[in-house]
Image 1 (cartoon, rainbow, N blue to C red):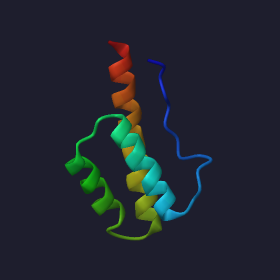
Image 2: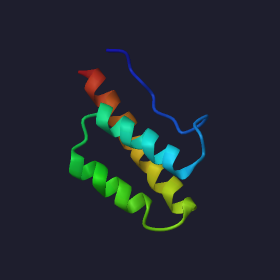
Image 3: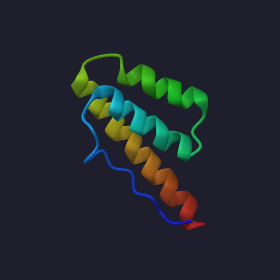
Image 4: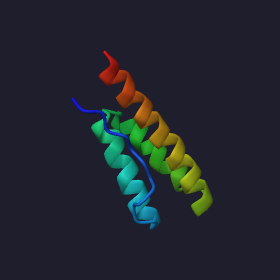
Length: 72
């Protein structure tokens, strides 16, 4: 399987588009429904800046999980 690098650069900056992209990446990387819900709750808990910070952190986790899976 080819490595996929997830990146928020170039996606629509609308808050729901950002969350949709991150949630899709999480599903591709086999995060549980509970983990996805926790991400969504944290992302929506404050302002747009918080959403971006939480989303960037989650994208990094998706990239790490993807890298670890493909390294085996």
